[in-house]
Image 1 (cartoon, rainbow, N blue to C red):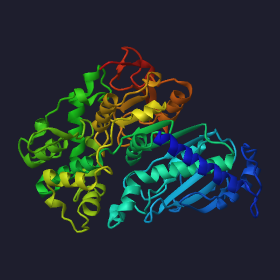
Image 2 (cartoon, one colour):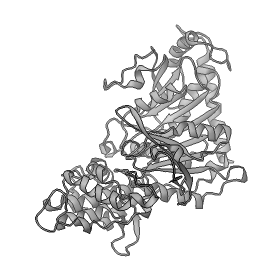
Image 3 (tube, rainbow, N blue to C red):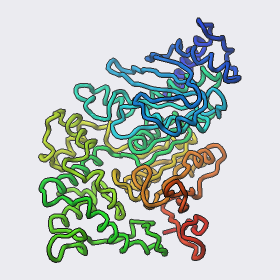
Image 4 (cartoon, rainbow, N blue to C red):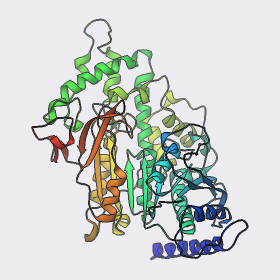
Length: 525
């Protein structure tokens, strides 16, 4: 009842704001309430009128038309997707849900070819910037789209020092505030509410996606959560423990020149477990590998590991465990990830994103010495300080499933930044905790991607249309039985493979090219 009342209040002020902007304004056209957009010319005129849009806790900074292929982001870095864009209305806003909030949001509205839908896109790391390439990808598909900087500038947690409200904005409030404001802008500009609303994010964006499903289940009809950084407290504790093992002593560091030898040994041991030798580990959970086989039998060399390096490798290949009980606290790198170890373990200091968590959020001390990190003590402190903000997301998504929501999760098995089984664990827990109605029992699916690194890249097929799969699921009731992924070299597709809904895996039929998705079928592991 409370949620229903809140939704009614939100739509009342959206309607009021719409009426306000539809009145004649200097230099703009009057738009009839409820009228559909009727062409690029009229929409260009209406774009400027959005500068006068009055929404709660919102300041519209600009509303301008961007000509075809002419968008240039603030950092000046070009992107092929920008060059392919048709004209759109670019609306920049600042949201202030608290006295210390300063949430930047952009909403992009196609002047023609709007598909009638809205897509919000997520961030990476500590955010601090609008996700322009993701916005462009959404608009190219015909969506009205939005992105937020989550309330600060720069991919660092320094913003959190002395600003608890800004940490709340980063943790969950900015995405919801953005969704509410963006829908109001869409309603005003086109004269109708979006027929469907989607969220699409990976990494921090994946965590944002799960937060939306948990805290604000009515914001979106469908959600894509890729490689979710959840829970961030435990993720960053795992990163710190690996750093202590790898960097505390010079002899413990495994040089990047040895990664290929480690990876080759792993693939040699595990590649054929799926019935076909193709250079990929289809299901790392079946793989067993002891780095002892790489121990140097004499002098140090490029294809072996010294005793201290052996210990570092064991830490990297193992889950985070409770020092007292031995219980698993967070998964570790999966076998097959070795080529990407340099992202977190290149040294000489811990991964900056994790280091920032403890310097600026937990201990509020920019000079904090990471070498003093204690798993038992400091993870407990992180949990206490960030309870409800960066701690585990509630897997009970019953309200989201109850309104018909669909959640499509994915994660690369070779993710070098966030352990893949973090997504497997959340998927398992949410299936257990969520009580979906009979009308929506098939509401969540997880796709694990062999050989894919963090949100893309890697040796395996790593390009796939998750948005199209979600659209078919939400709009036509066609749950994805598989999603075809491709791998390209030099711009040419050289391998395709079906991604299967977990726990199914792709199995070779016994005939046909191992580089053709048609030669595989999804089956139980």
